[in-house]
Image (cartoon, rainbow, N blue to C red):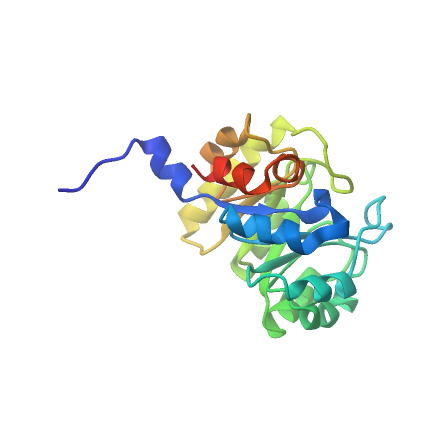
Length: 226
C-alpha cells in the first residue's frame, strides 16, 4: 500500500542543493567538496568574478581544473565576468558541466548561449535582483537553468532580498505554462530560516554559501534536503 506524504515533504524531497565554494576554506577545497558529497550535494557552484562585471575577484579555470579531480559532482561555473564569450573554451577544458552567464552582460546573448551549447555544456542564465523576469523570457527555450539572484552578485554573506520571491513564482509559472525543461535556481542569502519560502515560490535548486560552509558542511546540506 502506498504511503501518502504531506505536500511540504513531497516538495522539499525534490530540492537540489548546490554549495557555493565561495565561502569554503580555500586552503583545503578538496576536503570541503568531499564534505559536500557526504551531505549529498547535487552540484558544486563556482562563483567566478573578474573585478569588472562585479567588484570582486575570485578564481578562474586554473583553480577549477585543480579541484576537478576531487569529485564527480557536476560543476556549475557562474560567470560574473565582463566577457564570458572569451573564456568558454577555457572553462570547458577545466572540467565544468554547466556554464551560467548573466543576462546583464553587454554582448550578443543568443550567440553566447549557442556557443556554450556547442561546446557541450548545459546552459544557465542568471538575472540580478533588479532585472525583471520579462527580460529573460526570449532566452528561456535556449537554456537549461534560470538562476534568480536574491542578492546583488559580488560578495558572499549578503542578506536575502525578499522582493525576488514574486519573480521566482513568475518564472516557475512561465516554465510550467510553456512546458519547458528549465530548472529554477536561486542564489544569495539563503539560510535554513528562509529556504522554505524560496522552495514554495518554485525553486528547484538552492545555491548557498555561508549557510553551508559555516559549521558542519554535510549536516547543513542534509538539513536543506530533509
